[in-house]
View 1 (cartoon, helix red, strand yellow):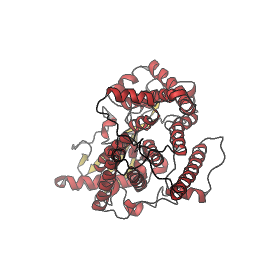
View 2 (cartoon, one colour):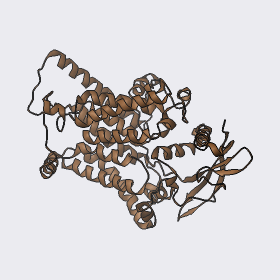
View 3 (tube, one colour):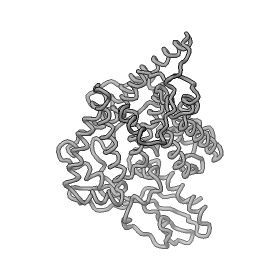
View 4 (tube, one colour):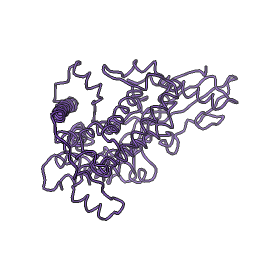
Length: 459
């Protein structure tokens, strides 16, 4: 699991680096002077906001990547885990509007990784015999509760008829052109009965997974079944919906639940998996070590309680929420989480953007197609309009009424980038349109509405 997490972090950073200027610098759509204006909470912090320059952001990305590499090979694993986790808190706070649930899961997995003995095997630390792998029971409990919480709370938040009786949730999810992938997504979308069966299977599988994780079983085989369900569910999600690294993060997060006997059999079949184990090494027990253990136990207990209350407060029947004073340490450690994927029901509003540019003499230009006419028709595959899932998530947020402030920022970024890249045909004005429709039952939709999101100039 440690190796998988490190690979995800490195892959995530490389993907984000492709939009480093756009998402994390002052030349992008979310400059540092706006960070505290929208979405910022008491206790939030970010090293990435200390400067909006490309160089400073690049330095932090490189440091982040280097420590992720150390985590991969298991070198100074505790320190590497701590630094990768802290830099993720900083990075996530830098731009809140390109995040999705997978980011929360990855960040919290790194937090509980501080308590797990994931340096014990396949690591430089284990080979050098730096420390004995001690199982931290509260840390293990926190890890298992994290994975169980993802499925327990998402299924309890899915209280609409499309999940619980109609079985239409997957139909509506695949009806979203901004999410459905060509190939497997289009194929499944053409089979209504199969989509209905998949909806019921997904719902009841998510009901079962938390109990399979938390219920004691001999040799951990119930957790092995939970892993198989998680692997199957998220593999199907990754094949049909454009969710970025979300499905991979969920699969890797569950690797730690694999029964030891199963892992031993896998290792015996794959010769590359030569285990470097620290299980035979010992460490000196002294009072300072015991004091540190007590401190770790106290930190784990507090984090467990906070995480449980945060999750419970998302349910309608739980009336208690953390007081503002208690939310500050939660926000400092960024333990906030919400597992409301496609809940209580699936989003119905859908559409695509049109970038209607006008130059200094009044000629019109389609900035998406780079054509001298503006095409308002729906693209064959709307999902291909988005370079990465970060851009798709930003576009989804811009559709929401509470995030309308993103629209002019995005509009200005698009026209300025266009004018930098196309000096021979600069635009003086950009009309950012959203062609909105609402998905209805039986493959029907409402009439497409042409909505003007923002008008901006190229100055």
